[in-house]
Length: 237
Image (cartoon, rainbow, N blue to C red; front, side, top):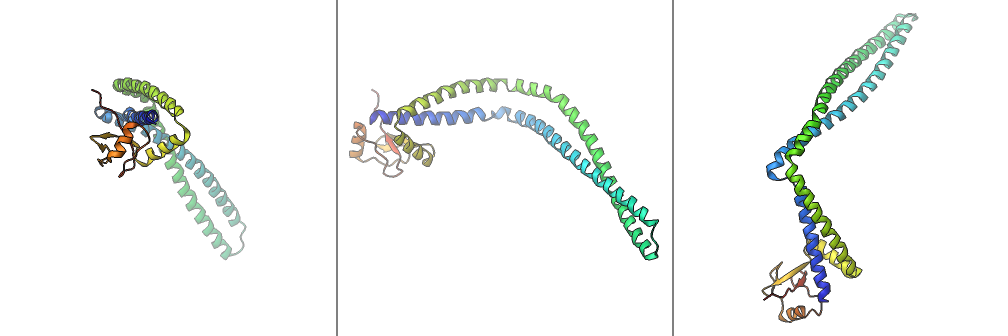
């Protein structure tokens, strides 16, 4: 039982180590945060511009189809006007022509506005894309020290994850599942040391008999208050 508890305690330590180092690896150092934020904004601005350009082109295509449809209706109304035989019909067709002309003008204006927007956006995008590779290179140079640190952390993580796999392979499935359940329930701290006769997590005093059982390694003992597994580590002389 004592050996299994040692393995579980080590497993928890390695899991917590991986979580902490992953957080450190993925967190930009405070002195580089502004640099990284400014660079991300430039990259995201290019992505937003590409997306808007694509959207505007789709809107232009739709507007051009609508314009063609309005113009076709306008021509049909004009042709109908020449064949009407009553003043009432004549007035009705004139109203239709007037409505069609308004739609044509409004759609032409929208087409023109979209064409101008696309032209300006394309120029802006070309300029940004031309300078982006150099900006990326300069950004990576500024972050080179952090990138080196990230690679070192990656090596540590690889070693820790390998140890986690080895430890998990030695622990029976039932005990491992119970440990994982408790680990999730207790915020990543399923096993805690006994310090000065008390639970290191909630500081509840461990009952003398339970402490002796724990020291003897006869069975798994949990804290009476927080229900975490207790771990006794003999003091080295």
